[in-house]
Every structure is written in C-alpha cells, then in structure tokens.
Length: 292
Length: 227
Image 1 (tube, each protein chain N blue to C red):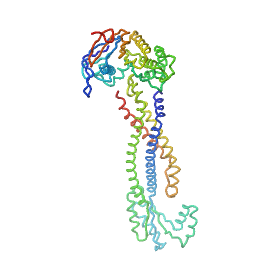
Image 2: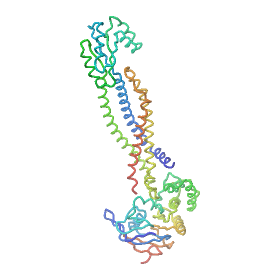
Image 3: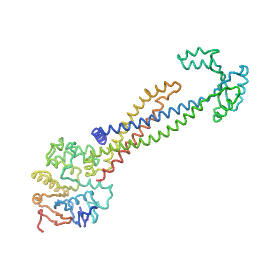
Image 4: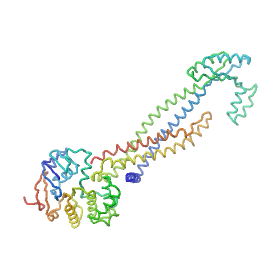
C-alpha cells in the first residue's frame, strides 16, 4: 500500500514526463499492433485462398458441346484430380450477378448470345496431394480444348512475399521502437528519482535496503506501461473496427478477421511490452542513485 | 563499542583526511568530537556510517567491521544508529508525523507499531502537538528535534549528531544538547560533532579533538583542554 501510494504520488508530481512516456509507448504499441493486424489479415486471406483449391478451366469457344463429356473424362483421368464440375456460361453469369447484388442487375443484358463468358470446368485436387497442384494446372492448360486456366496460386505467391517483407520489417520496427520506449521510460523514472533523491538519501541513512527503495519506482514504471497498454488496446480496437475494416470492406473481395479473434495476441503484445519496458526501464535507471 | 585503530584515509586527489587515528568509545558513553573545518571530523562520521571506507587501519562499529563488511549489510549497520545532521534533512512535503514514520517504514515496521511509536517519540522531544505540521512551518530548533525524533524512533544503540546545533539559536541549542544528554542517560551511546565551545564546556563530557587528521587530545572536560 505504501509502495503504491508513493508510486502514484510520483506520477502525479511528474505528470508531464509520465504523459510523454505513456504517449510514446502508445505510439510504439499502435505501430507494432497495426503491423501485427495487417500480417494476421494477410495470412488469414492466404489461408482462405489456399483452401479454395480450385482450378477454373475455360473451354475454348470452338469446342463442340458434344465433346464436353469426353473432355471431362480426360480431365478426371489426370492424377490427383478428385472432382470436375461443369459450369455453363449462363450459370457463371448468374453467380457473378449474385455476387454483385443490386449492382449486378445490368448484367442481365448479357444472357444468351451476348454472354462474354466461357463455359468452364471447376476442378478440385486431392487434399493430400496439394503439392502436385501446379502439375495438374500445367496439364490442363496444355490441353488443346482449354483456352486458359486460372487459380489462386499466383495471388498466394504475391501475398506470401508481401507477408515476408512485412514480418521482417515489423520485427525490426518492433526492436527499434522497444529501444526508444525503453529510453523514454527510463528517463522518466530517472527524473522521478532526481525529484526524490533527497528522500532516497534519507532512506539510505535510516537503513532502507536498495530493493525497498527500488520498489516504488519499478511500480511507477509498471503503471506507466500498463496505462499505455490499456489506452493502446482501446485505440487499436477503434482504428481497426472503425477505420481499417470499413476501408477493406470497400475492396469487396477480401474479408477481414474479426477483432475479437486477434485481441488475445494484441493484449499479450501490449501487456508484455508495457510490463517489460516498465520493469526494466525503471530497475536499471535507479542503480546509479543507490550508491550512498 | 566503537573502535578506530590506526585509521588512515586518503582520497584519490591526494588529500589525507585521516593520518593514524586511534580511539575507542564504549557503549553508553557521551563524546564530543571537535576540531576546525577540514580536520577530519566528517570523515570519522562518514566511516561510522560506511559512507567512506578506511584506506588503512580498522574501524569497528559493534560487530561490523567497516572495511571488510559486505555492501548488503550496510542497511543493517545503519539501522543500529540514528543520525542527526546540521541541515536537518527533513522532507518538506511530509508532516512531522510522516517524517518520523518514514524512518520506520523504510525499515519495514508495521502500521500498528508506527502509530504507537511515533507519537511517543515526538512526545520525548516535546513536539507531540506539532505532529500534523509541515517542517517549513517549524523553527530551526523544532526541525532539529523532529530530526532527532526520527533518529530515535528505531531505538538505535548509537546516536550520531553532526553539528546538531549549527543552525539553531543558542537557547534551542542547549535544549537539544539537554535532550541528547537525556537520551544518553537512558543508555544510548551519543557522539556529537560540534564547533560550539560554549556548549562543550558547559556539559563537561569526554572530548576528542581532531586536528589535521590526528587526535590532538582526548580527555574529559573543556573544549580546548590544556595539553
């Protein structure tokens, strides 16, 4: 109780410096948190794409419809192909129309002869042999009757390299920011010590142990760290739900991960950073003043 | 018991503060340490508190050997003594009660003990009615008595007073000295470092006179006792 009182007293007395360190910590945490949220969303998106496991093979317009069955058998005969589903071009158009909702109404002009789409096969590969996915794609696109194919692998590759860059960048940003916040917090605590050096001096003379003197300052550091963590968590939530998610929602084709799913890691990150910087930032800055 | 045995202290800048000082103070004694500024009085006091360590010889305070003791034992050494400084060293934004209680909290006393002990000690130094005042509201003499209460509160075997009357008027000075004398009569060893020859002469105690880092004289009686 005495320790907490002392710590809060010091925070009040030092409010400007406390405010500065909380602010810097919040900034650091938000940057780290945002980097994590982006990275988490990219991986979620990649997983989703990977799960699709679907090759769309567009049938050349020159192929007679009577040949379709034979073509389907041919594709089914390829190793590891588990299913081949035919989708007529009108069905495909209807699916598009559905996806666009009300905006898709104008697509109804294109039914029949005007339909620019091609008839297609949707092909799934055996889950246990996804490593041969590319081989299957190659074989199918090599067929004379197939105009071209599309699959999500290319997007996955681009996202994968993006994620790799983000992870490396995020790691270094985190290290640098952690050092910056450490520096700021330890300076705040040093200032608090300076304000109380007279008291510390007297404490030393009446026989207080170093650890006894240190406790209020470490508490002060922890309080700063935890306040910053709490505020950052709130701010991160607002940024994500009210800023980032609506922004991404405009892109239509991507679904964002709900904040609830990501918040345990965010709490862990912010709380961990707050505690770590608070404890070590203060514990090390005190030593100099304890030599009396 | 305090023992200085052929103690030397030289600082890195070449000053020799102490040049072979030897004396012994038994439990329950009242001793004045006198001498001009720079004679080495402060160094003696600092060694008793382990603020300085001798470069030669032995200093013993009770069971503690100042030169050999581990740093982690220093708080224990300091708890066995109470120190009063010329500049009082009170915390201005704590009440008189809290200033005294501070010394008890610093050594981990319980709230209950503090609530019982502090008023008692404030009563001893005659400041029971000022418990809720802040140090700047008090006279120099009163502040010094608060400092004395703080030194006494943990029941030390030894009280060290470094120029306790330096910043208070002569009448207060006598009162403080009287208080120290009373504390001594109850069995506590008291060491007073002072310039005040009048007081020293009046109280007729053992006087250790240090000059240029040596003991110039050590006898019962007057300030500058005849050799």
